[in-house]
Image (cartoon, rainbow, N blue to C red; front, side, top):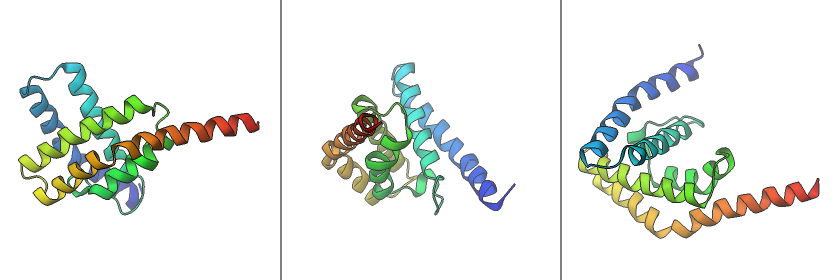
Length: 144
């Protein structure tokens, strides 16, 4: 196993208790099981993005730039299910997750505030990104 693979596995192991605690918090908040599953899956997929490129990051090291790049670039290109509704779902998951990270002291209040502000202010940009990517695929198909 390469050093890269070892580091990725270590980060995944580090992130697992964070994801489990987030899931427990959502359960205690009384959310429906389907909603909980969706939020945890969205954040888990984001955690894969964080180890896709170097520098590799843990969930508690993510910042507004990571979330922005995920929603405007990586997710629309890499997730076959990327759509307006999946972007909205991810935004909702990020809001819940980063609020929880800040409330539990797993992340600084400054970082969580920056992420939450960016999610609110850039919502239309995120929705447009997936729409633009879909258009580019349609144009590419038309060329064939």
